Length: 430
Image (cartoon, rainbow, N blue to C red; front, top):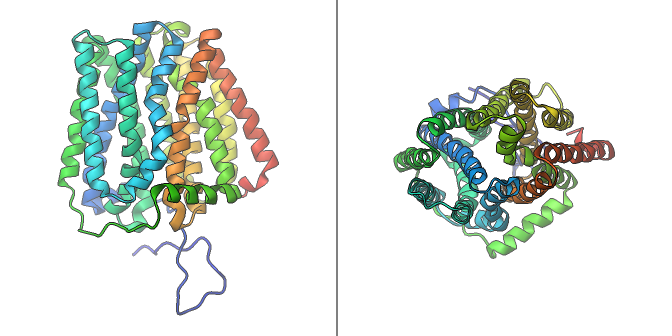
């Protein structure tokens, strides 16, 4: 039998009558596939969610390309992307507090059903010829509002689907499914757009939500009492923010996530513009570029799991941060589709190292009583600040060019990373 998780920090002198409780789970980089075998509920959830994410990536490709077709404007491509992320910035912290007071499984069923309706509306408007940029912005805002409540509920549901000591493996497997979908979704989208048109990417995404809903309906969880939390959701939010500001390592990691969320997003948002105007490729070339990012991310996740504790994670984070910026600058300078795809493979690999390492370090540092709010804040920064980067990248691309916008953002990130890991060496020691 595998040994249980050990406390990462505990008092050296503790009363034997009251055993010290582990503040965090120590990550154990095992083969995460075992979680699917051991936990039926998680197996139903994972297969449904991964299948649905394929549809989500198909819709993402179609929305970006549709915005470009409707407006021929790099700024509007960024604006539509911002519309899908802005509600997360405004609502997700409150939504996280709501999720802690509700049945998470029921909440996820509701949000996934609403996302099905949103995708069906996108299909109908495009298929019928009624789609306009105003409708596209509105439906993107609607999807963002639903996602603001779906993300914290879905993330916090995972621990109820697996044993507590399998949580880290389940999170790793979720990341793998997300990035597999990032590869498969754009590839299918390229075929669908070429053979049937953009509208059918939305239709297939709507159908994909049925996979999630079927899995959610089959999940069986033991009855339990919902927690009675003192104070209002707003008070809980403020308490969590105070903890994050006074804990230096958490504050520094959050600042890194914030800078990378704002200045790292333009390369994804402006990918349709780069594909068409810089690399002179069509929708299929755009899909190839997105798939290259996803394939690199899968390799990055496997690499990180293989390394385990054989490297200091803070030092690896510094190296991944520098490499991510350098490869993005090279991508901005490329004018060849195949070379750009190869560079984006490296971008995906270093991106997932940055994301997974900061996520894991935040969970390791944070005690049980604050981890949910810390991860809600992580989602708030990681996803919610995306609109700022989308609008900024779109504005710079309109004034100059998409490659300049990508290179400028990467340069800002590189300078910030150099300062952060030089001036704050404690991060490298994590």
